[in-house]
Length: 185
Ligand SMILES: Cc1cn([C@H]2C[C@H](O)[C@@H](COP(=O)(O)OP(=O)(O)O[C@H]3O[C@H](C)C(=O)[C@H](O)[C@H]3O)O2)c(=O)[nH]c1=O
Image (cartoon, rainbow, N blue to C red; front, side, top):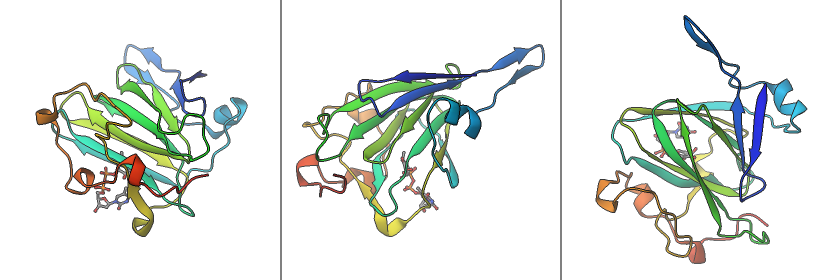
């Protein structure tokens, strides 16, 4: 029922639930605690988030919450398409500062599991893209933190010209990796 694929960052996984199509359309168990447990993934999600981004090139990120409100995230795209990015910000990780970028879309039905210790962000590749994601800790604005989306030390290619990108003011002002406090061991 569940396809789980590794990425270049072993803790970041791509999960593709089965989609049952018929003449009416489709049905899919987009999250199953049991199926995740059978795949060796036991996370306690406590909140679902849903965002709509109207313009192609809307970039939200790179975000994470600092402990003790750090969040695991399970991201999926019921409408549209995104380039989803996770950056390893665990100070002692051999992959510190490294990222993975994977296209998630309503068409490929892929989900990305981004664990605690990683910054997360995405850019939309189609208009009116909706992103739904589960998180394992509640929103804690005082622990909301960010990392610069365009830090040359990380080198993310968002796949779109800079002038196409739409960001919040907050997302234009995050620190670069070199200035980021080490929130995760
Ligand atoms: C994250 C969050 C936000 N909000 C409120 C706070 C603001 O009034 C409004 C927009 O928040 P923000 O601009 O932080 O939303 P995004 O830029 O989409 O942030 C998210 O985008 C990236 C991709 C992430 O991975 C994070 O989960 C999350 O930070 O929603 C809430 O009420 N609860 C929440 O959990």
